[in-house]
Each structure stands twice: as structure tokens, then as C-alpha cells.
Length: 323
Image (tube, rainbow, N blue to C red; front, side, top):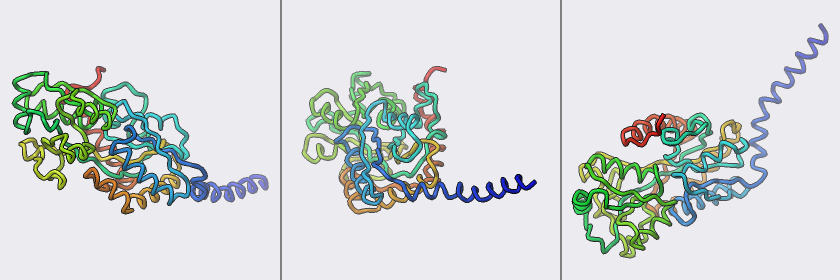
């Protein structure tokens, strides 16, 4: 009886210790550099803006947040890397929208909703379609007319198969009964090199193309937001062109499943503060992007809702994997 009483007393003493373990872990976190995996190559708008965000977060956390570029596979490699990373908060990943399409197009053994700890959403893209400045396709009307007259011959590039630019263009083509020839690239930097080199006729991308447009090398045929972009006031939106579509592809930061909630909160608070700094807003503005905050709960709900919505899109385009 006395022994049982001693065991119960020991258990009662241990309970608060276990309860405070997560808090203690968060207080000592981070004790070394954090790796942030970015889904696109160095030099593009995603990389440039995420480096500013990481630098801001480094100062808040007191440890370096080091960018590690992992391009390819439609922007899904960082999320896949999380599946084999320790759940300690020291490996984080950018989560592009393409992650939520992955199970519908590729055989994987993990769940994008359940197997990632969502920290926060940070921004989204401003997208559009560009052609070389000397292209005979002077407007969207010319683009559609040429594509109809030359089925399967109009080449356009994107930042990868099953990325938002690719799927949006395919949805546009389906709505307008066009046959386009898609050429995937690893990221904006490669895509811009290719269109400037005359290898493709058009490029669907985030506004990483802005410097080339401003230099008079490319022309914007349309943009994909709710409203026209201030930087390109003459470029109509898809809605203005009769296509009831808006694409801004929000993205944020995730950690491995099982990362302690207190560590997730520490990361959330640091990156939210990093988002609010003027340097980050200025970096985003270069590409017509804005801070697009969702907290941990909101971002987790967004992941769940997007997962269901992307299934419908992939099936509509006939791109779902064979069962």
C-alpha cells in the first residue's frame, strides 16, 4: 500500500515536468542554425523574397535561418524532405500549392494535410503571361487566334509540370478549346533565359518577369489577380478577358509532422514578426507580391480545403494518375 502511494506521488510530481517539457524546449529553441528549404532555384522571386524573410527571422530567433534551394518536381521536393527530417524545428520547408496536388498525380506514401506541421502562410504570387517584345502575338486576342490556327504548335513555358502556372494555362486552354505545347522549367530564372533566348513563344510565371518587361524585352498579355497590377496597368486580368479565374497561389512554411507545438509557436511568432518588417514588404513589392498571413490554425485549414479543391482541378484536366 505504501509502495503504491509512493508511486502515485512520483507520478504526480512527474506530470508537471512533462507538461513543462514542451515549454522548456521552446525556450531553448533554437540552439543551432535552422534550414529552410525553398522549392525554386536561386535568383528567382521566391528565393529572393524568402532570403529576406529568413534574414529577418534569423535576427529574431538568434540563430541563422539558412536557405537551401531544392528545385524540381513541381516545387514539391522540400515537402517530401520533411517526411524524413527530425521533428525538432531545425528543418523547415516552403510549401507551394503544388504540394496539395501531389497525391493525385504521383504515387506517394504520405499525406500533405496530415504529415506536415503547418507553421504559417507568408505570401502568394502575382502571375501573368508574357511574350517577347518583338513577338507577332501583340495581345491576348492574337495569342488565342494563333493557337487556334496552329493547334499544338504554340509553345509556352512554366516553372514546372503541375505548378500553378502550368495548371492555370491548361485550364484556360480547356475553356477556350486550345491545344498548347507546354515546356516545363525548374524555376523562373531558367524560364526567363529560355524565352529571352527564343526557345519558347510565351511564358506563364509569377512576376519575376517584371525586370525584363521594364527593360523592353518582354510584353505582358494578361495577369491573373482579382485586379490589374499597378506595375502593368495596361495588362488585362483573366476576368476582364471573359475567363472567370483568379490565381494567386498562396504559400507558407511547414515543419515535420510531430514537431512540438511550443516549437511551432516559437517559429510562427518569429516568422510573423519577420513578415511585418519593412524590408520584407519591399522585397515582395518588387514582384507585385504582398504579405498574406495565415496563422497555424488558419493555414492548416487552408491546407485541408486546398487539398480537396485541387483534386477536382486535376481530375477536370485529366491529369490524375491511373489508379
